[in-house]
Image (tube, rainbow, N blue to C red; front, side, top):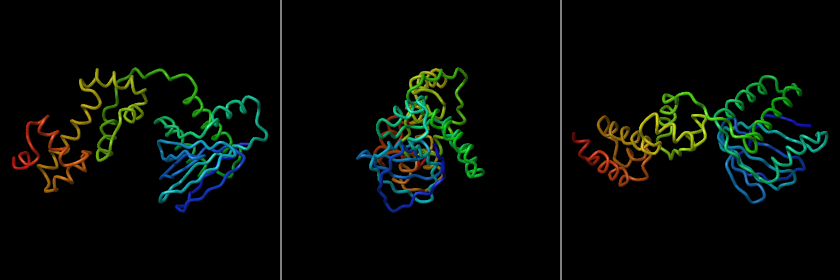
Length: 249
């Protein structure tokens, strides 16, 4: 019978195995897992599927909070057994889209409030399992036909500008497949997502150069360029100026 629980994973690495399948989801923070030699990170955007009897090690990072589903083999219907067999046929670290993350947040809040209610815990766990199964093996959701939420996309870009941002990540924010997102973005904005990201990085770098006295290497880091040289090359190519010339006005 499915059991859902909230847990904090300690920072000290721990290894064990158990006969039941396990789904580990992050409500906050991160954790490192290794399942049968396959390593991966559990965070808001990535889960971990641990097959029964698989040897696995894990270690939490900082103030983490996990939602863990334990799935003992007893008392499972034939239909559910088939679903679980496919879902847990091998260790996986599936990527979680924005809608699933919202569902996970709701489930975590309800468990935190009514975690002693076993019926609620089983129901929420079942919904999470089915939603994940559909994303991995079900039909591809129909792409949205409405306009892109550029305010939401820009907010995500600003919040994560210092690191690498992928098109797949932006597609998740927009709740679209990467291919559909790329096409709709180009039609709506007139630039590819990569071109738009570079423009956002250059605009932010130019603003920091004009308004602060940060060292060039720090400006490059803050705006997601791999080095000061990469920032200089991009500015010279697309703006026709070096960072030094831009700062001098």
